[in-house]
Image 1 (tube, rainbow, N blue to C red):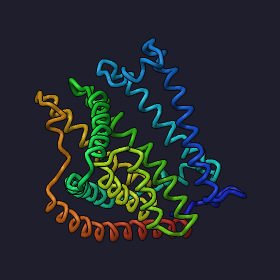
Image 2 (spheres, rainbow, N blue to C red):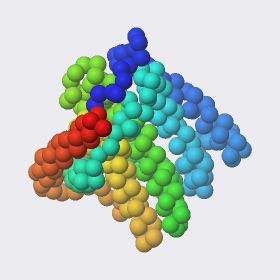
Image 3 (cartoon, rainbow, N blue to C red):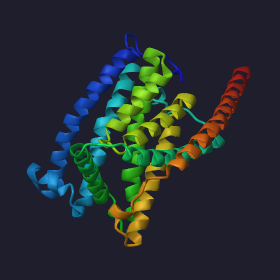
Length: 313
């Protein structure tokens, strides 16, 4: 995952980490301010009315704009600016200039599918952890708030709405979050510390924490670890982006099918799997990673052969 050209003079990944986190905080402030302005322009409502209306399905298009704007300012823009400050070719630095073969990408998608099953089993396990009544009520409140936001964003009455939801809830978060967490934070930590596993796990825990979900914390952390490994092994950010997109899109399609069938989403939306399926998923993931490693080796050999041929010619 080495850059084609070295960092800018005087810039290090350690400095980059602090810059990235500082810009993320600035993104909250600037993105939040712009969101208020955009909401006022689109709806004519005041800031006081905005919070309540954000949970109103009749404002679905406005909410989609605001959510995408916020994600861009909190994740994508800070990562891109930091990469630009570190490197003359920020897209290359972030891992957006690498390529892998279709077999490698296919195995990565299979890995994500198996990880979704493992995450579902871990979600079931998390629910078995005993909690005090006050903690249970608090965490349930967080889940209810998250579900209300999902219900607003997933207002779909036809294929055009489905495609828009896939873009807003599937593709945009996959790109913005992977650019920040894997291409930005994880990569900078790996280069600054030389500790691959520490960087992957730390980034994955933070990735899960920003979703503010107790019941989904372990599941998202494990998913983040798999996404981090995909990036660490390939150096190609498009691989975890596609895997993340696959996970998100499966959820969007599930909601769409429930809406078409006229079923209650809160009662029928179930991302949990039995514990035994998680054990099976671990075995499958382990085996797929052996195939994935071999596929990457072939990609690197092919890349080396091509570069040698270019030098000869």
